[in-house]
Image (cartoon, rainbow, N blue to C red; front, side):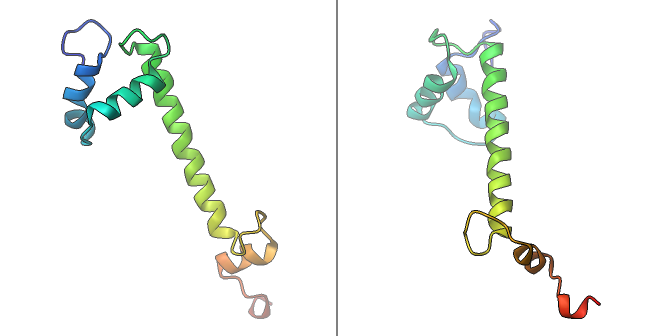
Length: 99
């Protein structure tokens, strides 16, 4: 993506290379939103440190989303807690036939 080889990504490089590298098309508006979130020093370029921080934040968000989805799977009554009965239900444990 760093087509000029200067070690940073500018908005044009991101716009041109994002779909090629990640398989997802981006609009200019989406690139601007990305730069607002990632370009910490507002230099209009993303350096290696900013890129790493954005990647780590994205990985953390994905992990949190997966954990929330797993919790919801067990929290059948949406109470915000998981009871032993809900765990047994999800795992298919029938106390009557477990003896």
